[in-house]
Image (cartoon, rainbow, N blue to C red; front, top):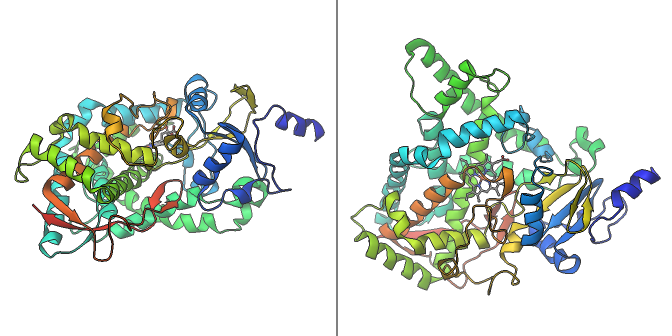
Length: 478
Ligand code: HEM
């Protein structure tokens, strides 16, 4: 025991002293990204915490993030699986949580080459325009009644339907967006539970008891979503058997793999977690980025005005449709998306990593089995790396070449290294297009009683970060 203890604590990064048994668990609070950011001011850019029986190293500077994501990305290629995530069937067949083995590489490759390459994305441009036009149609109806809308919910539903059309060639959310709230709740439950401080994750002996009921709580979402996907997949398998006609969507790609590929890689059962991953990882993150962007614009009317001027100058009047091919000509809109992701990275601590063997980072040892978090939220707000970091100033991205592709370690909203977000190109295109259309087709007002100064910008932490009070705003057709 003594030898084990010495080995674990030897040359570990500095960190706050913990309490017996629970260690530092009580210090994380409801917003761990903020608590860890404050602690890093005392303990430095790499610090260690003990959460129950688990040692966790936290990186809070670009240099340390680079050591983890670039220099040692092989050692940190795997993730610990929280109990709430393990509650889903066949978690080993996801992309986000599976170990970085050849099966994971194969699944990731199929997604990347069949959905996310520039060529594939270009081919499906019409789909994104159709989904965005449906959103505009809905907004115009609300505008004609002078009604306010919940921007995050609509952006979420639009993204969900886009992913659903890419995979299944059909919508999940109805055209009136009535079921948007229900789906948002289902996905948010998964995100919130994955970010919850769950004792089962830090004291493995407690797992079977599920003391906080997290497994039971989250299972509701998994069961419901699996049932929906089950139905769609079975229907398609039957169609393919009877008509032999293919739709050519991502489900057909996966079913082709089931028929022709290695059966240990793809079966009708094991493609479900992969599909679920795309829906979960893509919808909430993109919806909440659109919501934060609009909230920042409503708080900063001068930025909103400048963005609208760019759109009028490049596209012309609101009768002309904005298309994806216009985006390269809209640097200010692109800068707004980047600035939003700097201040409000939807996955503030990225997804956790686990050390595959002992690794030297910044002169300290991260021991095999220790977990690693990268506080992207904190790095993006650190005055050492950003001028006036708390101000929303898209101009900073016009003056620099900093990008979110995982090479600039002071800016990591999509993570980096071998597990960087594969959905980045789709998210970027879709969020920028939605924002451009919001601003080109409508002027926006806050509901009575709320002003740009009083707009609540509080955050709610899950494994993703959402706006605590949903943004409600009134569209006015122009
Ligand atoms: C604003 C939108 C998005 C943000 C900010 C975002 C951010 C992230 C981050 C930080 C990670 C973890 C990266 C790491 O560990 O280094 C991740 C992983 C992932 N994202 Fe995204 N994401 C977004 C949209 C999407 C979309 C649209 C999809 C797909 C439709 C997607 C699919 C995934 C998947 C499958 C993973 C797991 C990758 C792996 O572990 O190999 N994401 N995302």
